[in-house]
Picture 1 (cartoon, chains in turn yellow, orange):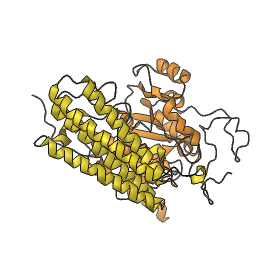
Picture 2: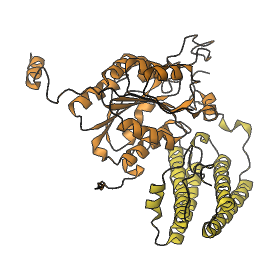
Picture 3: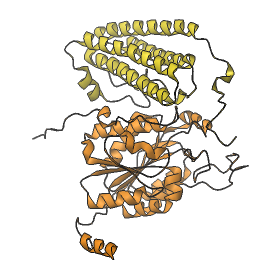
Picture 4: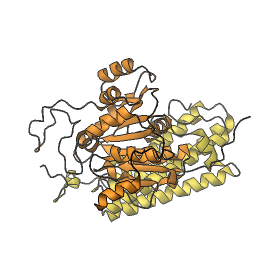
Length: 176
Length: 278
């Protein structure tokens, strides 16, 4: 089940908790990094949005810690190793960042991450042979589906910007 | 009896400094920084036993963003600085960061001789095929037809082929990575640092500001279809004939690294100081 997605091999319920934890922890780290970038480039609206996204993912991460109980998911995630051939599903694509990006762009990055996470947990549900893993993965998949819907709702508040969104009167590109 | 690893487990965050990285949003170098810290954590080395040396350019900002020892040197001279450091302090892990302008043009000759000397250190070049910091001049790896106001119609010049040159000059480990795959890159860096001798890791790292076309690289890179070889002839054929987007370890040699006996210098420091006083 794991090989197709590049995920670490999930052989037990603790493995699933560890992988789910790592997905959320990676998302927090990535959104904070994007917020830092926007701070450097003086885009305060995006700083706030990426910090909010980091906070939301942090809540999910902590909820997984709670569900995992006595399982040391941090150590287990380290033992399982990184995702191969790319990053974990909710790590927003850094290459999608732009110093003049708008909340719509940030939400599109977030939507893509939530959709990847949904696809991942759905694939675990579809391929897991262990009933416990399947049941827990179903719960995670349901949560991700809720997040996808939430981001869709937020996108209605922030419509797509006009095509000129990246026009900078004082651009860094000196060649043009 | 199995040995027990008593080193404390370290996290990538343990190697990050408090200095916020200043690159353009979307720059591949953010990923490279993550790969550095992930690799250092995997190696479990104390930050004070690692030195990150750099020259000048966007990529060379990286030492400040780690909490390892760092040396932000002069343009193109990072390898010379790092070589001096490593032969006098062989117990340190030395990682050198550079870009295609700093490393292949201004520092091109140092590159050849660092490969030839085979000192035990790792040379990471973040290659974006352009001078980013100075606003988009063609670099040694820029494609001949790349058309800009600074090179109308393109330079028409054959690009430098760093991996082939590294192999011909004697580098002991050669790999190509893509910044957009930080986990894979970190794994390669771990192997590069562990491999004795001069390890050369070229990381394709898109410049989203001056080369937005490089965003397409994520769709062009692919894993090298063959296992690394220790046969330089085979490696040369592979590297010469690949499409430039083959990712992975391409050569793993077995040359003995150069390491003079510590303290074996021809002139004592005090004698040198006297020369300066004259």
